[in-house]
Length: 184
Image (cartoon, rainbow, N blue to C red; front, side, top):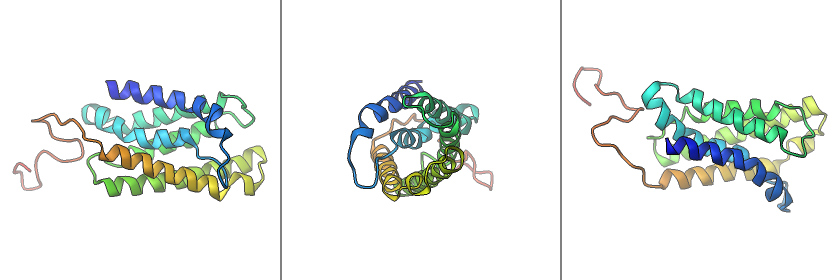
């Protein structure tokens, strides 16, 4: 339960951090999307917590992304179409929960980088189509690179943290019995 509460608090604080701190940085090519990085890094933790018990881990990741996107949509300066970021982050959270938490660190990092790249690209395309943002600004290669690298770096850091194991319980991504009917 603590993982869920901590994840929700972090993604709701991320838009405030994005507006107050990160947007003021002068990085070459643009700034990373901290909200997207938080959703991608924290959604697999929700799968390992809620998915193993109820089978609804992907829905929890999508809900986390939607809440983060809605908070980012209404955070000032809200000069874009409301719901655009909620849609992109909802899909990113849903796809991120499909990466098993018990997978190797390399596969989780690669999956997070691909999700960040696709979500950044989708967000840029929607910004250009719905808001009239120039294509060069909406799809800034520097901002996409910073976001993709940040998501990979944060996911790698979280993947290398030691996790608590509950002995006697089978992880959600591994079957209890192998195909032959014997215990795995």
